[in-house]
Amino acid sequence: MCSDLECSYLLSCNACQRNKSPTTKPVGPLHPHSVPDTCGNSVTIDFNGPLSPFGPENYDFLMTMTNRASCNIHAVPYHKTLTTKGAVHLFFQDWYCENGLPLKIISDHDTRFDNQLWCTFHKLTGITLVMSSSFHTQTNGASEQMNKTLIPAVRHHVDHLQDGWADALPAVRFAI
Image 1 (cartoon, rainbow, N blue to C red):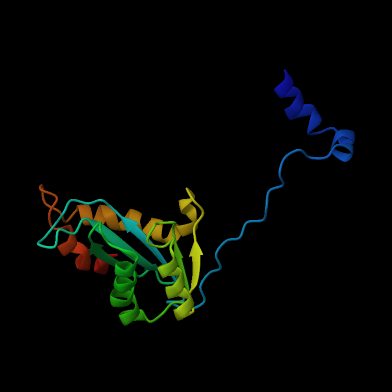
Image 2 (image 1 turned 135 degrees about the vertical axis):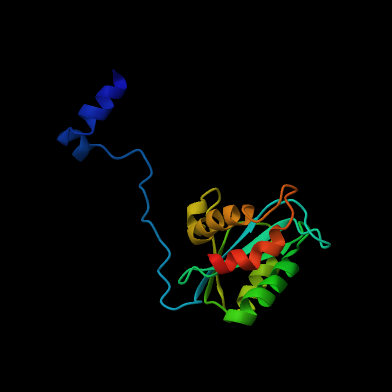
């Protein structure tokens, strides 16, 4: 009865609405990411894994870098022991050399991104760092959507031993 009263009467009572102060915290405005105006200005980075170890290098994780304007994706295999220095190296080797520096990088709160070296890298290059909210993957939506496309596509190229996923990345990237 109390919940019915609160839902129906109190919310519609004109005198109650005018004379009582709200007891809940007001909802703040949404701040969606602006749509990038040119290709390569905004990049999302995400890590996927663990995957089955493959090849002589025993890669077991996947770093994806997605261009938000064109949805062009770079998928780079790496080891679970990848450090922040290694992530910066992979970014330069596999993104910067082909596309140049973006104006903004959107990433989650991975330990490789939430430290002093990553912040220093952004200050030195002039890239704006945008970290997603914890447990709110929609902030990094472009990357998450590409991961939902990439991972099933890679699954089609692996054998019964779950081998071959790293070798299939160039073909899958081309197909996407």
